[in-house]
Length: 441
Image (cartoon, rainbow, N blue to C red; front, side, top):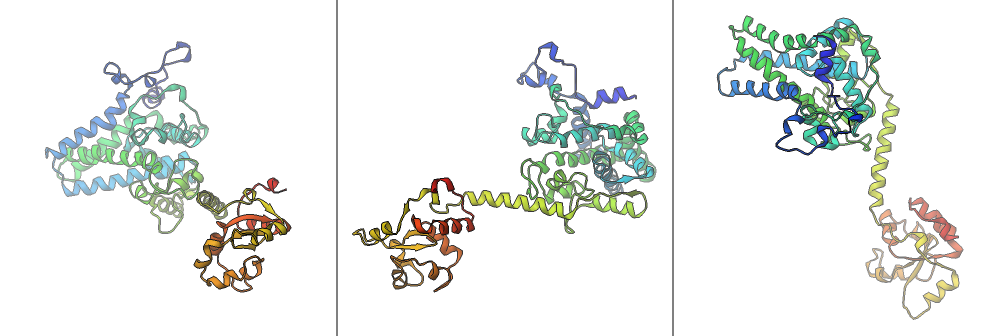
């Protein structure tokens, strides 16, 4: 089948044009009269109906599972699955390394065994996903919900007004990509269903039907669902150690079912890195596979972002989280909220009938009246500093107080001593406090 038919199979419906002045079916509410128009029926058959038939045959015991069929199905699952992560994704979508033609041909043939579209279509869609992550042009926009990003984007007709493009000139220059795209339908049918059926029938007691159901239908369903988890679960579960402006997340559980593609926050920040997992204990068999092929001379040019760039991203995100946490903490009255007293104001207040116990520390006047009995050093020691500048004693002359002591003291601020205003400003700057300096002038 030619490229025209493949394009019609895999790309969104573009029958609607702005000149028609009619809303696309995706923009209309669901009704009993139009629901079937919203469905991409070809994908519905391939992704839903065929697997239902396969599971029915398996569960109803019409096709019993032999152990050798199970082992072969698992092996075929791994062989075909790694072609998606190492081939479709990291090689062709992100050009994270260079592969020799035998390896690329292997990826193209067994990649067709997953019923996920041609390399050209898959990589083009994925590049659009990275270019427009979390926008209406993202093919599997995670903001539309878990179900949509997992399967809904395939089963529903997309709105063509959000259709986007990405540069795939490098894919068009690869003869293997062109060959697979041009002959994708027969390759997909043969590699997905016919080949495993023939192998199981030939080598496993003539169990052709078992090979078709387990190594064919159910295996395809399993690898599709694992791949879909990269679009859905990897945008919902886990941490965001490198950036949180978008939805991708790192999650070891997702990595387990996707051949190591679960460290998605790292991947979206460093997409051309051939690794998804950068720590030795993180599960990423695709990374290991690519490295092994390079040792065999089948691949080269493995790309890695510098460790310094990775550390920069980690530091920036940690600082961002820390600042957010810090902004939710009350640090006491800010300097611009406090009145400014001179020494006479201070002494008049100390000698007044208000019976307030005031202490100057770092140019800030504090009312410690209600804290004297709570003072760990004793009430007598604190009373000895009342009406005086206790900065030296507080900062080590008597006892070098902890950060917690500074924090407790901050809630007792009532004014700034005019003659020590610069000391007060420098003190709060060291604590990282924010204030409007102009209001103090």
